[in-house]
Length: 146
Image (cartoon, rainbow, N blue to C red; front, side, top):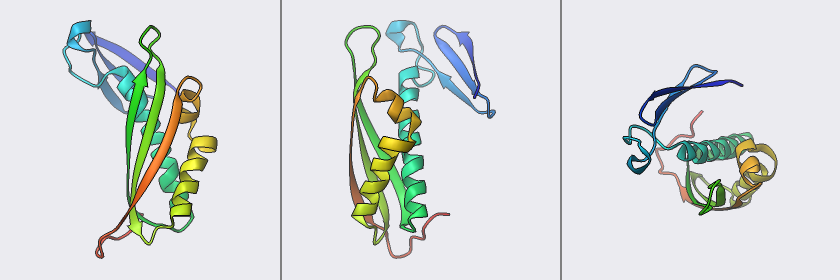
């Protein structure tokens, strides 16, 4: 895996992934930034949320659950002193589908947290990571996504 980070100006950077995608990151105005993009630590949190969401959706699909939507809402706390690592992260999943089995949803989240999500497992070295979930019934005309 590769990445390239290019300083634009002020405290703004463009991160380019090895797969050819880019993201703009910037610092807060009080740190010399102009608020042109997300903060680097926000990118880390979003990456962890995307990583675990990917796992949960994939596991539920493989379990033949009729999932139609998945949202992960993350809240995090950071240390007060440098390095300001994450100390607590909570992931709240909102999983929508038809007749979803709560045990399967719980199992998917646990497998992601303990076995598959590289980002979460790495962050768990400094942060206490907790999870919970709610299940919402899909509307009658909602089809499972492929």
